[in-house]
Length: 447
Image (cartoon, rainbow, N blue to C red):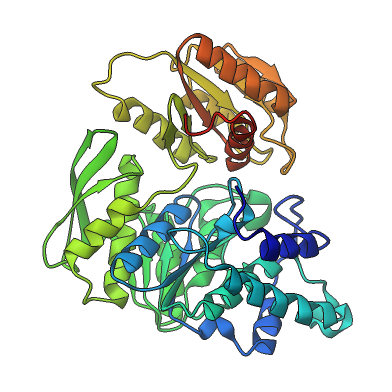
């Protein structure tokens, strides 16, 4: 059910006429001066409260949520800006517990529309039109200021250096693992992509970086040195151990000199990689607020949950993994999370965007599923069904394919129901969204 339909509905209708590169990405269309212009005209609301800025090829949404839940547990009113949304646009702008009060959005939307409607393209830097994502980011910034947040957490949209969120002057920056993704925009090597992600590193601002290859670390070291930014590599300053799966939670121990004692946590978001995300989030918070105690950090981390991140609903597992590594992590978690619950028949519903390394993804699925359905992940992003089919053929995986996701989804769900199988939905957050929408329409979600 939509929350705050009036204000957010008005914004969505207003913004739909603006260039949306989430739906139709284009090269050479990223810049920062428009966001700087907009924020300046509003009196720089991005500076209204200290912020955390989170980039990375994967896991940045989880890290952002974890930071927000720790801050919330410590009693701070915390704004959370993330993307994409799964069911409702309002998921992008709010708190770790859900939306703000309606009046926050009403005021923010009115301020934004009143101003943007009065701006002519020729008045903007480079006479370039405002984009959809710039409007969304501006709405997030205004909402956090109007909600009088104590802190805010921003997940980067794409890349970092020229992302609309990079107008921030954060208290700390976080960069999660880097791998090949969006190569047509960010570069065709992990080092080039790291240089784009590292663009969020600010002068004299500490940056915490997740485990990386040595060549990627060197890219970040150079950027940090050039900007006099203290840099901390999480795998060098912390130790994760005692990973155990129990009652569909992942338990682990995190040690670091930043903590007065080791953290002992039980994460609702399972996966060994989530332990690394938790370490990154906890260290970043400790850097900014060293007075927050370990019990508060543990409780905050244990409350962190995100839709579409290995989310279990009955016999369906929703996971928006869309890179080769993240698919590998998903398969590893799938093997561990249900351990002790007896053997289960596994089905797969897969669809990914055209720019993904589907050939390597398909290799991760070999010998794991008794039934596979391949489809396009919806109409939002360009997808190549023939390439997906070829990838599964090359991997020697039998599958059923259907280019129409509206037909493929009920087919896969019905097959899983007939065989009492667990169904993994993965490859794209957009596919996760479409399946959830279908289940809601059938009043089946949450059953």
